View (cartoon, rainbow, N blue to C red):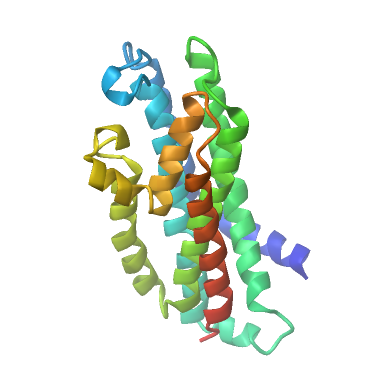
Length: 244
């Protein structure tokens, strides 16, 4: 049943090429442009010795993750609820965790492919190849994906319609990206604001990715924050899932 569900949901997603281009091609193009601009690869003291290209590699990767999770998964499942598809599924052997796991798996695959392309671009364009700890990057991004997909799944589990889901995810997107360092790099934030940021999912992820790019394995605190969000949010999504 899971295999059939994955094939069906993948085909349905591929019928929306505009969404895929917006959530995958845009971050790749944005980072490529940033990486080739002269001067962006030079280390900067105000960024703790990182260059803007190195710093925003992590931030743009998190943008790709956020765009896909906030625009895709909640909209799909809430539209199924709105059209009565979930109500019909409720009388079959289908269980909420299977439906959520399928959507999480598909979205995770897409975002990992997107980020893999960005890492190839970084390896090719940066003077010293890919900077930092690859294991740290992989562990961080997987945990960040779990946290964000858990958040998206929770919205999808409760939102009665696609419009409500879209409104909720739009409201969440901007503060999450602020704490990720999109407008103000974490290194430039006041101490109290940086502390708050590191307790949010994308803030913790951004800090951990910055540590990895700097050559260190991420701090345990950041990884624990991400793991806690992933476990709690996915658990809540499964327990609170509504068929109608």
